[in-house]
Image (cartoon, rainbow, N blue to C red):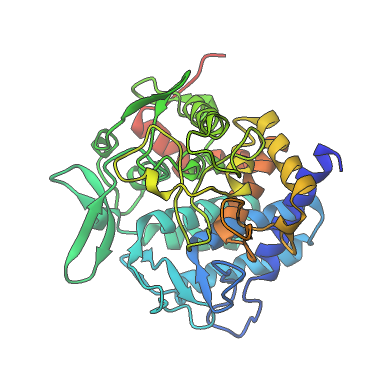
Length: 402
């Protein structure tokens, strides 16, 4: 199969997950919710829904569904989030019951700022694509979010979690996947956070081989991908002249080089099998990564590789990412399933292990990045939004000189 064919086929299979694994019962309080993963038919993830809302737009543009079908699903989903999904101050719970839209007690953590932000990113693309009633629904959802609730003024950082009664806990104190939170938080027309919050997280410059970049704590590639699925960082420098797009290029190349160097001698790692990122593993969900490591993170590496790691970096490393996708498809048929590449595989256990399911956020980053690589569609929609543009202006981002 040609490289174009496998990339396009994977994109279609990713879309199928978001369309087929959604609650399509219009009489259900959970209408439009999308599974966290295909292995558990009862639990939805709001981050999965965020990716799924953007996936609907791609499906329409590709002719996989009609505009009418996509409009109705999107409208119903946003109504579910406005009226039914459990929240605290506008922040939604990470995991939900697929039918009731209440927080899922089995996987209950807290109202989540990062997952709410991922959902809002998808809702922004929907608002820009459809306009009208869908744009109004987004406005109501976004304006309800009380960003200061998640702001620790003393540390000038966002909290990572929040519990009613005890308040916020942990902090977004380093660069990771949270970049969209700064644009969305300062741009809020109702409950903004101060612009100075952008100065609150540490930029830790690290190096692996020839690659120098601001690394995130665990070294997992998703931290360099998620915000980039919507925000076109390649056009901008931040107030400190940091090029976050180039930063992700270097992080992706370093991740691949680490798999080539393969100091632990894992069978799964090599030049065509790379992209260490959070994923399923033989021991459950884990977060493998590449150096420079934060303390105690390297122990997560056990030989597990997720196709979404390389595929989600296709806009940063197109040749290397496509080569990895070709390798997975041609040499590991056990890795291919109903929704394209299964979540991960590991040749360093006996017998060799292949995931039997997919995870929504991994399918999501793959699909959106493939579409941005092909057309820039999701970038174009997101960057048109008035709140995104307001965030850019308030934070002091400047367009690169052409």
